[in-house]
Amino acid sequence: MKINISKIIIFSFVTFFLSIFWLGLKKDNNYNTKNIIGNKISNFQLPSIYNNKFISEEDLKENKFTLINFFASWCAPCRAEHQYLLNLSNRNREIKILGINFKDKKNNAISFLNELGDPYNSVAEDIDGKASILFGIYGIPESILINEELVIIKKIVGPIDPKQYDEILQLIQ
Amino acid sequence: MKFKKIIIIYIFLFSTLYADENNLELIKIYKNLRCLICQGQSIADSNSDFASTVKLVVQDQVKEGKSKEEIYDFLISKYGEWIVYQPTFTKTNFLLWAIPYLLLAFGGIVIYFLVRKNKYNKSN
Image 1 (tube, rainbow over the protein chains, first blue to last red):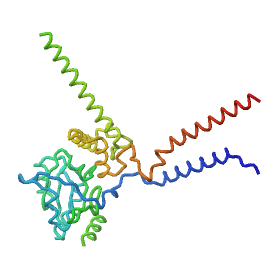
Image 2 (spheres, rainbow over the protein chains, first blue to last red; image 1 turned 90 degrees about the horizontal axis):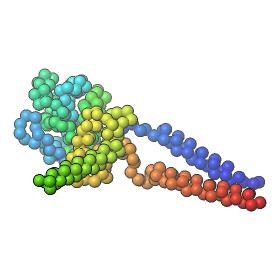
Image 3 (tube, chains in turn purple, cyan; image 1 turned 90 degrees about the vertical axis):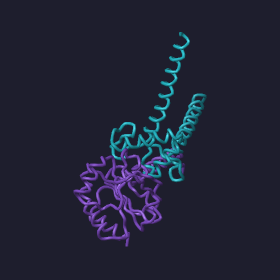
Image 4 (cartoon, rainbow over the protein chains, first blue to last red; image 1 turned 120 degrees about the horizontal axis):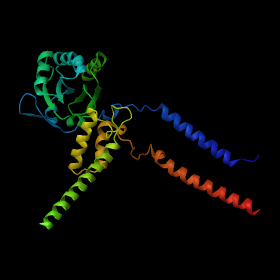
C-alpha cells in the first residue's frame, strides 16, 4: 500500500492544532490569586492614619495571624464586609487586623470607622495606591491573610462573605 | 548673543527628545501590561484606577533604573503571568514560541519541494 506522506503530514498538523485549541479552551484564563498563595509579603512601610508612626512588615511578625484589609470610606462593598471584620476582631484573639486605607481622605476614613466601628489593630494609609501593587491588589475591598512568617495563606478578592469568614476561622484554628 | 540663543535652542531640543524617549519606553512597558479589571485593554489604553496606579509604580521603577524585565518580573510575582501580554519563555510554553519558526521552516521546505517538482515536470 502506497503511503501518502503529504496526507499524513496534513492530518498530523490538523490534529496537533485542534488539540492545542481544545487545551486552550479548557484553560482558565481568568485572573486568580493562586500564584501569590505561599509567597511572603513584600517589605513595606506605610504611615499610620492616627499618628506620625510608620507601620511595616516587622510589626506583623509579632502576630500569629494578620488579616491585611484594604478599605476606603468611598467603597460601598467595604461597608458590607465590615461586620465580619468586627466579628473577627471581637471573637478571636489569634488574629490581628491591619487596615490599609486606600486612596482616601484621612478624615473620611476616621468618620467611617467611628460610624461603623473599628475592627483594626492598626490602620495605615496608602494615599496614592502604590502600596496596593506590592500586595497584588487590583480593587477594593481585598484581604490577605498571612501567618507569623509573613507568608500569604489566603487572599480574598471582594468583600468578605459568610463562606470566606468561616474559611478564615478554619485557617486560624 | 546669537551663540546663547543657539545653546538655549539646543538644550530645549535635546531635553524634549530625551523626554520623548523616556515616554516611549514607558508606553512600550504599559502596552505589554494587561489591565486586569478591563475588557481587553492594556494598561496604556485604560484610565481605570488600577491602570493609573500601575503606571505610577512603573514610572517609579523606571526612575530607580530598573530594566523592563525586572519590572515585568516584579508585576508577575504579584499578579501572575496573566498581567503581561507577552509570556515569558518557559518549559511549558516553549511550543508557543517555537511554532511560528517551525511553521516558517516547514513552509520553506514545502515551497522548495513544490518548485523542484515543477521544474522537474517542465523539463520532462
